[in-house]
Image (cartoon, rainbow, N blue to C red):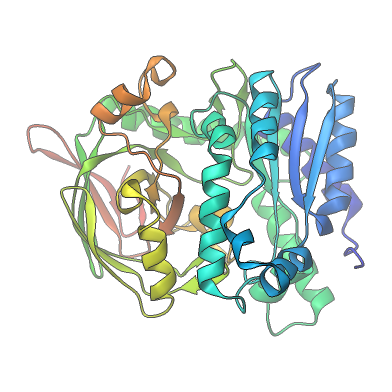
Length: 413
């Protein structure tokens, strides 16, 4: 497979942003890095940047769509209930020892679209269960971690299906570089300015201490209670190991933890959701006492139901995030088929696991204390988009008084 030829200057800038802004990699710190094999040009740049920053050992783990498909076409039935738990235990041990985590997104989002959905669901469930020891270090923000992206051919074909492959890859690369703020001469300064703007949003929301958010829009009348002692986050955040990092490159959101038992009403998706090799369109859900009691979609309904039945917490919310319709990613008008980008184009909610970092003094809270405050627990965390140019959001205080937060898809202040 021939890797696409990308602008080497912007590729090197993206690597530096991932290492210095995304991770803020510390001298002597090891790095565990996962990526699709097509992203090897970026992986090499990241390794070089990391070692220049004083990294201990950079360990890349590469995946391949063809190998993934080979499993579903040739593997024995019992293999779909297995996962490399030994690998994930090793990753957890690395994180316990102080390693940072980086993931490069870019796999073909429809790579498994033609495979047996039941086998795909079984394999994903097994993988999610096996990954929990490592994932808990990430969801609890024990370590500095980040996600960046690389324009693979399979991904580019989905985003730009009408273009020749080389043109599609080039256009996706341009979109990634722009969204990641590496198109200019000083991307680190651009990120500092952007982080300051997101910090101002979180400071206002944390000062207001809203008890709930009320979303209204076409097909949406949803009240999302906020967890007790919730804290809004956005942009750069400090992990429990004391390192300030940007978990997502790019990011446009501010987000917090909803109360898993205080979500009521109806909500309609404003963008399709790409999940497990399927495109789920026109999602609608109805919540009662925090739980999604009805769910339907115009396409991909079977995959949606399997997702919601993953475990007890999969029908409850673990995140609520605010993104203005005017965000640069939204204004591209593209469906990226990738949550890293699509979630930064619209306000969204996430089914499943909450982030402990979105609580005041979250590092000191036990899982039982987080649950008591309304935090949700699940093996999944799946974001889907509910915001758009007709979205209004009110902050609701404990006394019932309201404050406009969004009007017509944009910040109200």
